[in-house]
Length: 110
Picture: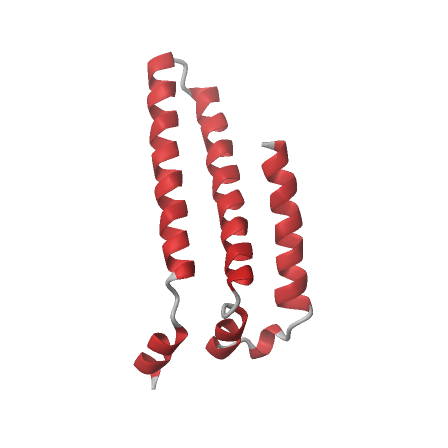
């Protein structure tokens, strides 16, 4: 949890600096996202940010629930359920990031 928190903090601060300070957030358009996501590096960066945010959040939720659930079998079941939901959320996010095609989106807008 500490390691994911540190990595999440570094990635989030980097994201804020790169996306909201160095770029003009008031002129953010689909073309801007298209230019950024042309690079697989930026897509991977965003995926890592999502990955650590999801893992960190679900792990925190699991720990809070363990404070209130006292039956060991229920704790195990809830932990497994949260793990499945976290994995599905990560996979869903990865598909969204890596299958993004701005030309297809632009065709529906124009």
